[in-house]
Length: 250
View 1: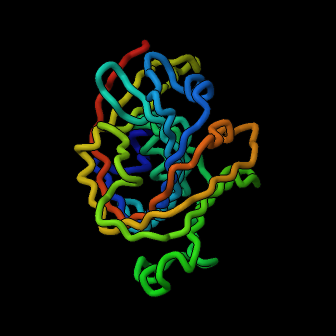
View 2: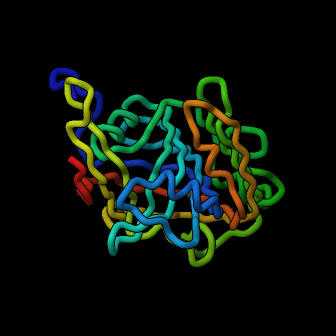
């Protein structure tokens, strides 16, 4: 980080807004290839893909999207993130430099019934399933993924689907190069869920679809669904605080 011209403030960082998440099973061979050693895949081969409209945050309105693969490091069950996208340079730099979020700049949208979502009251007003919620992530002129969900059930819990959890936290592969371009820091980092102070104010569930367009620079399409288990739309808030190092490669 250039000391005379930092792009982001110190942790913690606050976010609040709307998130659309789809839970699905994917190809175990692809999952194994995307997980860095020594992570082990969850035997259920579960993946979560999302699009988020985080209109209240420490750096102003931001949108993001990405995927988590359920995985395990020794006795820690969590979710590894191989791909993530963001439309804020501040949040992008902070995520990549501090914890190793795999963020790239992209165009992200969350659309309800063909228009930008104003508030969750709109969903109550139209009776949920009368409209479809759509999240898209586009980069380099390619719509790398699109997720759709019909809001059919208002839930009293914060689970994405019944009985599902992302585990104890998020796992990232963080690599910081030296001046010769070779890795200076290479580590698996961990952001415990318990530190997020995550609050879920509203949850809708329903059937969902996922589509990908192939991109040579964003191979997220390799994580195509084998079986879609369901989706959830939530109004949330959370804090990103200090993480910890699980494993050092160098």
